[in-house]
Image (cartoon, rainbow, N blue to C red; front, top):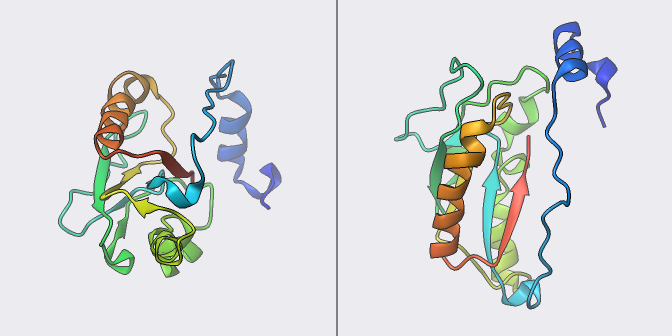
Length: 160
């Protein structure tokens, strides 16, 4: 587990002065049925994208609030990573995309019956969005509508 002292001085100052948003109460919904009966979607903030998709814009002030749709049958080894944060070592993620986008593991869980079935698509966002207003007001509701249209019961969120 990393600690703040592992970060660069620039990142430590940012973390100490950033005005974090608090959710109170924290949204939570109890599952209506066992996970082995649920339709599961994967959502990551790892900034992964298909080779055919435009990578996330790491120069956008406040962060790129768009998302990419990744079909459930995608070979994760082919995914690009456009995550911009220098606050963590990406070497492991670049060596094995499943560390930040565990689609292969979810497919194994589906095959074994641990989860009911996978949604037809996963969603990828950029992490390190320091100005989340548009994300909260526009992009997140759009993504939620796609997941609802896919009949998703449970989302595995993998934040990076």
